[in-house]
Amino acid sequence: MIKISELSAVYKQKLKTADEAVKAIQSGDRVHYGLFNGLVVHLDKALAKRAGELKDVKICTTIWAYPGPPAILEADPDAKSFKYLSTHFSVTDRRMNKEGRCWFIPVQFRENPKYWAETVGDIDVAMLQVAPMDAYGNFNLGPQIAEYWGIFSKAKKIIVEVNEKMPVVQGIQTFVNIDRIDTIVEGPGVDMPIITGKGASDIDKAIGALVVERIGSGSTLQLGVGGLPNYIGSLIAHSDIGDLSVHSEMLVDAYMHLYNAGKITGNKNLDKGRMVYTFAQGTQELYDFVNNNPLCCAAPVDYVNALEVIAANDKVVSINSCLQVDLWGQVNSESAGWQHIGGTGGQLDFVMGAFKSPGGQSFLCTPSTRKNKDGSLESLITPRLPEGSIVTVPRAATHFVVTEYGIANLKGMSTWERAERLIGVAHPDFREGLIKEAERMGIWKNTSKIPL
Image 1 (tube, rainbow, N blue to C red):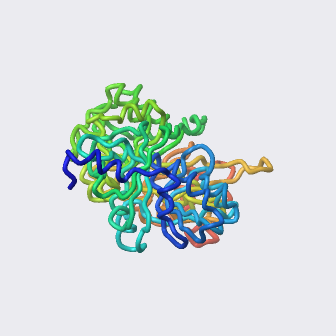
Image 2: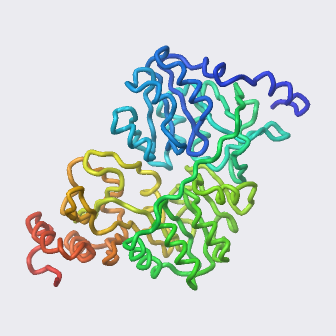
């Protein structure tokens, strides 16, 4: 460990420009770009200048959330210099994937630290944004801890991009010391990505109302991203539900609003009084809320998403969106046909962890239909998942499936009971066809039909 009296001199010794720092990257290297709000920006632009010079550099990351695509992709449209890989997809990643310039890495989020530390091989260079160094030589990692320490354990070189606008968070393993860092880069402060999602639709509101009826006081909440979770948060804020706790892979604005409404006490079994999360994304108001806030506890994902940790809290309620559910109870939350939409994330982690929790419940929510480009309706309760679909949650793990027509509890149900319950929450226009398909698939006999 470097002496405090020597910190200033060591800092100056390690300080380089972004252009100088990226000279450490060679053809064929594996480079990590950081996570969520901590993705590098100035270093990305510097590396983009080397397009054409380098070949087959693998760039690994999780969710490009900043405006516009990474500079390396703009500079290298044919992906000859840079292969861009992501363990989860943003809108930008999805578009780049469709153009053949971004590839997906399937993972279970809770396993990511082990994935980087033990199974991928060396990371030649890890680059990430951090908050300015404190008086003890520590750089706070900001509101995204996730798998950073797995990455650090295999990185041959660590380059940090100091961002004066990065929130400083409290929690577990939230900083890296200067003695582990090879190069420091400074640049103009970069605003945190603002993630708001779409507002809640009428269908979201119907689904949200059904879910909130099942939530009791004393629950521990895990909410996903988007209009539906934020709407559910607003419903709870205006309900008589109280004494809530937070244990969630993602911290979103809904939790801040619930806390401000006096709904969150943190009276849970583990980490009492603290909102536990592994990354936070939302509005600037949320980033201001987590900044140096002891109520909020950022922690590694192999702790936050561990099934036994989730289950150690009572009455865990997990609420997430999905894209399709088939009559077996298999859930697709990642693709539409061949088109990749998003990653697995921690959905399966919390579906399984919530069910293991005493009194726990997990809700997978989807509209009953979607409108196609030609204006026709397509049922999202399907006999079988279409070709190209990804099974995010296997049928044995699925608990509650929710549409605007109701809630289907699949746990402990036989295959024909599952089909009946799922057809019961499908759009009425599709129920007869689903029954015929269930019969053709041998899921049930005629005598077990539900009345329409």
